[in-house]
Image (cartoon, rainbow, N blue to C red):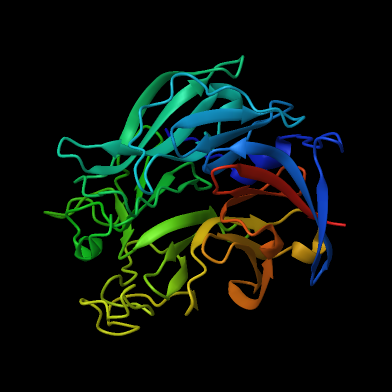
Length: 382
């Protein structure tokens, strides 16, 4: 039986100190609406890092590099050699080793979940998700097993999605891009442009919305997405939130509902990169599809996402933070309930593509930059 595990409790129980010596961890100060923003370099020298996950106790953090390496960053900012036992990835274009999350029962089972681009037989690729046990010496993953594969494999290097989120009941949600094949986002016999919901072992829950329907993939939870590169569980409501890239304009923030259509490519606020309309688009809204919860007419290039519910920085409470690749910023959206009431742009001074943001167990934010010489930063208010 699926164990009910509150992820918030898991995170709260972790105690992690990531301060590094001043000589090795320079701190920069920037202005923000809520006071002086202090940004400390935890580690540099990462090659296009994609995601970060916090290990309990004093074990540090796991960081993925898109080229295929999984590394440990120690509490004092030391970067490990690549771990063994990681699956072979299809590292082309936007593909490679992508998200990393811990099992809700990590303290008992030491299980780590990875999403990555996996090669198909015809030279194309799709998103896959697997899991393995992290060795006690933090040098390898053991018994790695694939629990999910996006079918069919259609990507030539674009739009893998790939964020992983466990909900409060332990179900695993996976965001899937439409592989730059727009119409597939509306095809329920394909896993492109979808969010799927599975058990941790890959089995499909009987109460998924399309189970038993002929010609429909039972894994599907919602559909009509373009390239959802950010997702997080709202800690106050327990609902799944997702963000995704529009084409040229029209990046979206969505609250995900069971069985709902989110419109792409029939509904969009964006246009093609060429300046021409999206061929399938019928307007900004279409009947039968949910409108975005929040939309950016000019695309920031949204990426990783994290809600802030810690006590350390009260000015940030009830905010959601989203990385921006194109504009090179960290976006803070202030919330009242679910309503976005204010937007603030941070970290533009770094002039770097922000790939991921996570709330640390210590109440700071941790931010990854997607660069050849990528960095992990610790961010807080003075």
